[in-house]
Length: 372
Image (cartoon, rainbow, N blue to C red; front, top):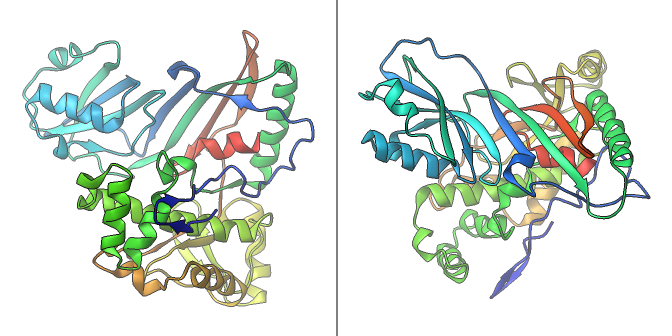
């Protein structure tokens, strides 16, 4: 994973070759998915259910071949609302069948009229109300149903056995909480451009955006924030890679993340690490890694050495992420591993292997697929 560049090219920030939990299969075959939207189904797992009363209308929608932003614009136009006022808990893949909540305040149309907006790409499955707007991140996770096929002649049974083996290992040891390739843009170059903003090189960033055909978006704060986040994500992936394969082992100086509420606490000494390790083995806590920023809680000991080395090699400092040009990123901690929210499953359906699993908010299904 490199963000070295020359005047005309940024290197791709690929995640496919990152260290994995499961040993590579010597007889591996490439698998394909998303041959059609129906091959990749995602359903939002809400953090809470709407109450049925309130000034905010909640729409449970199903979309095909559309981005979440395209859906909010379509619905806003039909409801005579500003699409920027839409409430969503997360963004969902465009090339997939996805179901999620979208909210608007003070909608006057009846549920029957709203449901009638449905077409082949966008279906309004149900309409209800709640007292507040849905906010980004207000979801427990996502449930995935993914159909995978071999690019060659490997039998479905061979793929099924590999999938079942991998899912069992990940269930026990945890899933590396890598940011997936979607985080880095279609060309995989967002991290490199985000580094320019963190370094305060606005001119270089605008030149790179123009070269990518995105000159008009170079001054968009949301776009700039997204691109800086990609650089933070790349650095997190590097730290996670350096901690592989022992993502469940607590080290003195670690900042442990509590899985039930994301609270972070310090493992100050070797005695603390020994005392807390049974909780890590029970999947209650895990070591955390950095989303670099000046207000981020910092570890000590070996974990601090790893993070400092990666930050120094990138040629930036914590304070740089607080620049105005970088949209003043405060920083945060993120667990190095996550666990399935439901019992994972793999089975054959009409000669195709179908995977079913659920992941916490912010996790990427492609990480599980890379392990398989």
